[in-house]
Every structure is written in C-alpha cells, then in structure tokens.
Length: 247
Image (tube, rainbow, N blue to C red; front, side, top):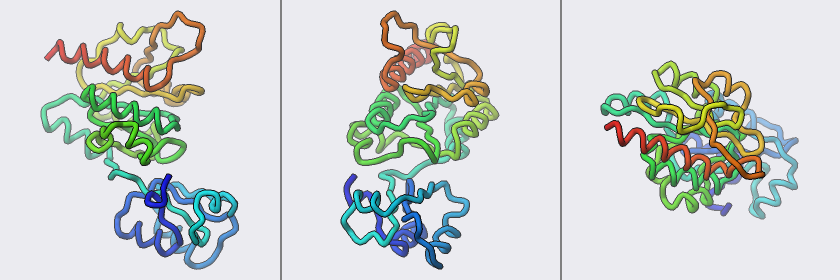
C-alpha cells in the first residue's frame, strides 16, 4: 500500500473524516491518549470505521513519515448501502443479484471476484466493516477496473445484511461443502443473493443458519475446496445462464 492510500496524524485524519473521505480502518498507537484522541473517538461514533490499537513498531513498519501515532487507510471507492441499493434495483424493474463475502481477506481474491461479478451482471458486492477485505489499490488492479463500476456495499455485519436481504424479498443461498444440494439443482430465478466464505473457514455457522438454502460444487479431487474466486465464478455463471434463459 502506497502513502497515497493513507492519512497520517490525528488532525489530518479528523479533517478527512469531516470532509467525507471513505476510511476503511484506523490504526492508533496502543498507549496514545489525550483530548484529540477522545475527539477522534467521538467523531467516529455511528460510523463503520474499525479502530485498531497497535504497537508503535507496527505503525513504523507501515510508514517512515511522522504519523504521530495515527494512520488512516483510505478507500479507493465510495461505498454504497444495501438499504439504498436494493430499492433502486427494484424500482428499475429488475430482480437484485447480490454477492456477499463472509470472512474473505485476500485482496487479490476480492479483486478477481469483483471482476467476475461485473461480467456476470451482479448488482452489488457486499463486505462487512470488520474482518474483511476492503477496496485497496491491489484489489482495484486485480479487478481490472471492475471495482470502478461495480457497487460495493460495506455493512456492519454479513449477518445483518442477510437478514435485510431476506426481509426485502431476496432469496439468499450460501455456498458450503456442508450442503446436500448441488449449485445446478436450484433455481436462481427472481431476487437472489449468494454468500461466499473464506477458503479456510467457509461461511460462518451463524450466517448459514439464516440463509434460505445451502448449495455446493461437487468435486472429485483430493483438495478440500476450490479457490473462493473460482468457486464464485462457477456459481455465478450458472445463475447467469438460468436467469438469461428465463428472460
């Protein structure tokens, strides 16, 4: 990550937030105290910006600039909100087609997934505000420009996003090896969302419980799972095939 993706110093970070800049996360020196830090905390209330308390050595490894104990990581895009996007898609007379990422942290996988989503006609990619990838320069590069046009929604949690989608009439599928149904055996007609999990942990148990249906990709090899970006592509283009045939 280059210096242009970061903001250094408490006042500079506060000014950026007040100016409406999209901030993915903020790192603060572990023992940093004072009025300005308290002021920053007040400013962040109600905003989905994770704050990590870290040793000063970690900040020094990130940059040699005078960070004053605070570094903010700036997003390369403006995030959307599902509560605004879903009604907009319906108003256009279309059925929403959404992908949610649960615990995916690799930016290159994220970029590749975004590229596939854009090609498959997905309306939005959803990520949680914490414990997830964000739109970085590396992700932008891997997406081949898709992240410039594909809406990315940052929600407080994937769990809340799933519940909102279901309440909005969207059927939510979870991709998991625990499923009995193959991804080709279900219908992707109508408003649909697909939840993809990290390769090591998959979709969380709590999120699996609130999804409408679980689906899997049959495999015959000895490796436990597909790369998440490949798995996403396989499922999305089956969904696209079905949805295109029914138009």
